[in-house]
Amino acid sequence: MPLRRDIQGLRALAVLAVIGAHAAGWPRGGFAGVDVFFVISGFVITGMLREQQEAGRIRLSRFYARRARRLLPAALVTVGAAVGAAFALFGRARAEQVMWDGVSALLLVSNWRFTQQGTDYFHAGDAVSPLQNFWSLSVEEQFYLVWPGLLIVSLLFVPAVARRGRAAAAVAAGWAVVVIAASFGWALLQGSSAPTAAYFSTATRAWEFALGALLAAGVPLLRRLPAALGALLAWIGVAGVVAALVLIDPAAVGFPGPWAAAPTLATALALAGGVTAPPRALFLRTNPVAVVVGNASYSLYLWHFPVVVFAAALLPASPWSLPLILAIIAVVGFASYAIIEQPLRYAPSWVGGCRRLRPIPRSRRSRHRMPRSPHPPRSRLRCRSCGRPRSRRGVPRGGSRARATSRAVRGRRPRVRRRSRSRW
Image (cartoon, rainbow, N blue to C red; front, top):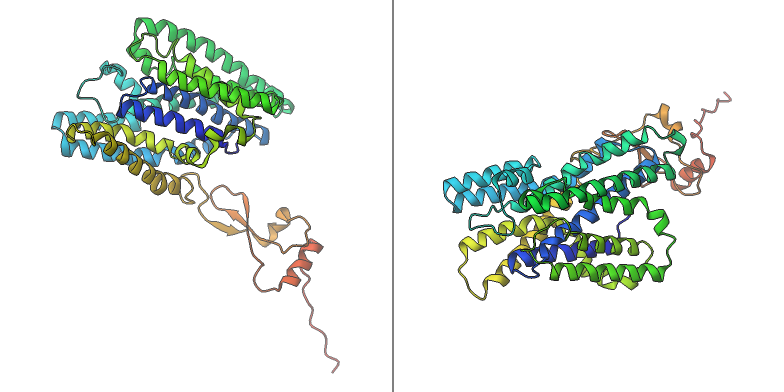
């Protein structure tokens, strides 16, 4: 799925709201930025799955390998740093508790652990865990342990000819509607009876991912919207997100249902309008600063809560505390993005990446022959891990550019020169 700058702008808005709510207490509804993330995640991931299905089939191994490369390195470093700092700064009992919080975060069950402990997200005491923000990552990955498999199994009942057309989008949309109805209904019931458990529950949050998935399934229809109408919907959506982040009261009972519907529906409008809206009409979300912050939003989200918790234990109350905390979050978050997240995400030797390239045997090169072109051919290579043919720019060694060009035009192997017979 191609990168949309307006989506990165939405991510920037969400992560800045979360950081402001935890570090400064404003906006008071900034915790709802996580719900914005959930809708964006459902939209992007389902769009990627839909494109894979249209290209051939959904490969779970490749999907989960990409997820691991995207999320695991920065999460490992954050958990390790938080656990090490806890043993250095806190008592042994609290440090061990942070250690087990880190184990549950890496096992993607943080939300279950905090639910078992009876953690109240809005009325946490002084002993709040520095890894409490990992609950959202656990909820997200628990949803994606089920959602791709559900789509694959459902597509098995669709004729093979129709799997790459509208039938696949209809299957995804149908399941998204079912998940939205069931999950939102459960959020309404559990939100009033057990609000603490409802806040961390995957069952009460699944409808937010499904809302984004429903939008991803309907992208072909959304592309028919006029550009002016798309820009109007996008601006209405952004205004709704900002209003929800400012006006939602953390003390209000009923979150994620029904109050989470405000930021999620507004995010859905912003995403739907951005399908056809020109980038210039969304300059607040597509400007370079917003895109840079949105690109680093994952690392900023991971590091902001440990910094806030440890700063509250170390820094004295002063007018300089808040600017210092925000500066530390920015430095550590962007450093993590530049040094850990991006290099390991695209590293050739990482999980599921292309490790080394080897030439295709000469006897099998005819299968991967380049199309006829007047340009010099590229040496044909094959990836050792995935086996797919790759190409590397440059003229093959041992021949001039003119000779390589003539070979590409002929589209066959070069002829072997025979030795001329001597007349004597």
